[in-house]
Amino acid sequence: MSSQELFADGIGEITLVGGMVRIDWVSLSVTERDEQGQPSLEFRQRVVMPPEGFLRSFSAMEDLVKKLVDAGVIRRQESAPGSIGQESTAGRPRPASPNFSNG
Image (cartoon, rainbow, N blue to C red; front, side):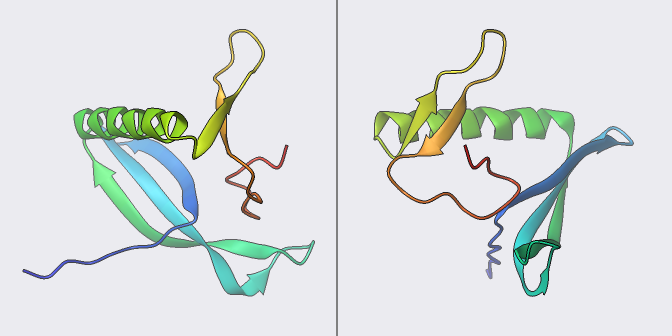
């Protein structure tokens, strides 16, 4: 059995179309730049799944975030009441990607 591995810098877009969740994975371009000279994001691959599969995936990602926080790899930042908490890398530079905040 062969397997395929995909590297992505993040998710470009998540949509619900025709009852299916579509997740577009993006990576920083090697050749294309934006107005500020930063690498542009390029579409790499799309994953399409039913909403139930998306919810299971989301739950698995939440579990991994908790493990990363517990291991000290990332830390939760306090946020305003009613907003969702953010995670950040502890002591490491942030990726130069619009998928990550720089604050």
